Picture 1 (tube, rainbow, N blue to C red):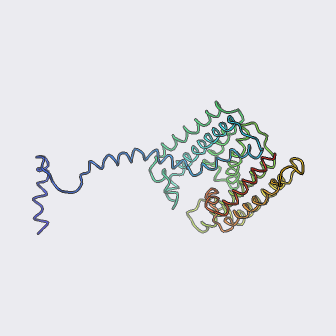
Picture 2: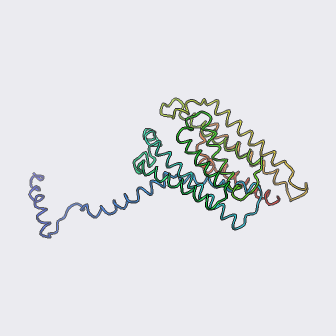
Length: 333
């Protein structure tokens, strides 16, 4: 009876509103339209930013690796140049992420985790991701040609070309996919020295290259362990055996440690220079960091390198100690 008795009053609401009468009822929709519109307006830029993977930008700090390894003091101009290289490499990597997510949108929608990526979730359209990625790639290359030396521009262009080739086909080629990802890390570590005209040590290149391969292979191994028997995993990962990937990260870890120790034991000055042999002592935290990281690799929990390093307090402390010792080593060079 109450529903029937309320019906006449409900039908009279439009008429009362037209006469300016005050009517109690639920909130009207117009006030909510503006915030929703603002949210939609910010949706595309925020989606593009998320697709550019801000958390991955920390990897580009490697651009200072070569000058640091050479023990070169940085002037204000050199520091500005390295900051520029960091920005250009970040733009290049972001361009690759945008294009990669646009290409893999359909496959990502079927993935339990990657389906949350903005392109796969529909927050960013595929054409928008392609356009933003292409513009970033062109802008980064053009800026490198204008603002950097020829070798730096060539190295950055090679990085973009290699990564785009990886997105299109190379990530489906066994072993080559590991090589391309490792080379991307090595290029980050090299480009700072190339930009400043600093000669690159052979020990630096070997340690950086095999250290990167260690982390890449450990990540692949962890993915293989976690998705073993899961039909939703990517086809290439299923072609690797866990035994092979374990062999790769163990081999890479051994070579990286050996190369670093050979560098540390190499004579760089008078035997009595410095208060302590910081160069030799820096081997201890370096080896400990490899051993600690290998714990996560062996468990199959070595995901993204930045997550492993920043997520484990002991590994972070070891890293800080190594940086301090390495800084003292560089100060003595």
